[in-house]
Amino acid sequence: MVLMTQSGVSQLPENVLKCAYTRITDDLRQALLKCIDSTKKARTFGSVFAEPVDYVALGIPDYIEVIKRPMDLSTLKSNLLIGEYIFLHEFLKDAELIFSNCRTYNGMSNDGYFWKAAEEVEKFFINTISRVDGLNLTLDIYKKIVQSPIPVIPEYSELPMTVSELQIMIKRMSELPKPALTACIQYYLQRKGASPEEMTGTEFTLHFVSTDSAILRDLDKLIRKKAMEAKENKTQRAKKLKH
Image 1 (cartoon, helix red, strand yellow):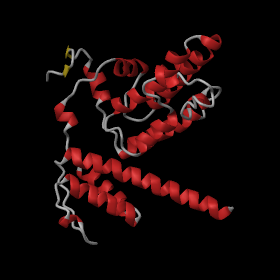
Image 2: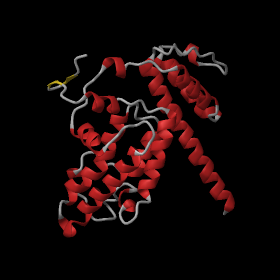
Image 3: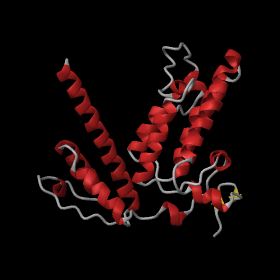
């Protein structure tokens, strides 16, 4: 198999590519969520990267000019929850931004405090992930993945959803509140080219075809997003009742 990048043939070792293209299953997603939560609680510096940089409160308005794609552990967690990442390399490259952004913006200012924080928490984060069963991720493999363009491998990128993935998606969809469920159904029908007449009514029969990879992946992301919003709304209502 010839692996191509924009600059030519990939020189990445097979074990690095295999790790990079690890599919993020629900089991792996749960394991990665735990890693994020553990990193937030990392002694000394974990809280530094827990939330988005509040550049207004911190009085650093140039932050968004210097840092083109801000990232933090909470945003990484939200992206993971809504299915933003299909493969491990996508997750790791976003995670790496948390720490490289910090080094880029702060450099060695404040006696290198933030540089040291980024170095320490990044190592903690990767060491935590490396303990996930069957992942075979090392610090060296992590660095190769985040520092190199990952080649597009069609037979990986265009893999259809598995039966198990479809079943989990359908179950999650069925548990949505009615307004969210309706929105997801209409989104799917629209992507499938349904006419406005076909999208009206109160009852629908959906036929999912596993080879509709792009549509189903996008639908899965929407379902996860709606599920997370429903959970947050439920939590907010519970808080209001307590008061």
